[in-house]
Length: 269
Image 1 (cartoon, helix red, strand yellow):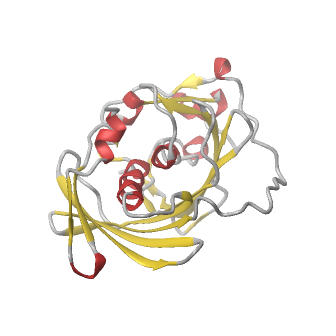
Image 2 (cartoon, helix red, strand yellow; image 1 turned 60 degrees about the vertical axis):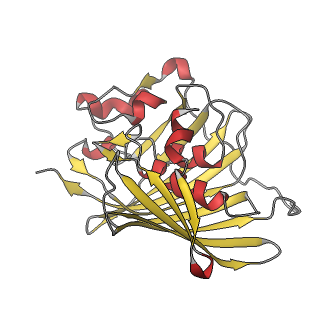
């Protein structure tokens, strides 16, 4: 089994009262950022438990509030319950607890798989990203095991901050795929949506801590290519809060997902 699938698979599931399901999981150490489980990985973990419960699985919207740090290699429990069900949509809630402390709180909306698509319209074309042969791989770093399992290539100007060269625009463009071959399904797209460094590093350098407070990902299409091309952009920092907007596209020009996260900007001590 692929390391990602192993990491999001529940060890066991039990039913409780009021339609609540409890999924026992163990937080993988294969997708760490500075020794902490990556937010996109945790979103994929929650989404996997919700997908196990929902009979609708198309174009989900997953929104997660990050309340505390998860601990890698430690057991946890994911509590899921249905909020509402209709002909078109299923809505669920998920809560991840570790050592009896709430770590994540999430909602997920799933659309009926046979919902008629009455309109497809892109007012902007797929993002322009430099060819992979012109991009640079993000350097391997201790306690960043996510890059042992995800191959991330970035345009040189998006990675210049590694060498102390800062830019004028907080934007990152690049490519991503699994190192061990695996197609991007719904859970994999959630992982990819949070696998790049924060774009604020381009203008401020890696001298900050940028913890995510809330993140929402809307998956529009499952990709038809091994690689995804991505763009992440931060435009505003207000009282230490910033937004990061993302777009993920496949090589056929299909919009795969859009994301927005709200994070804190903290200068390192």
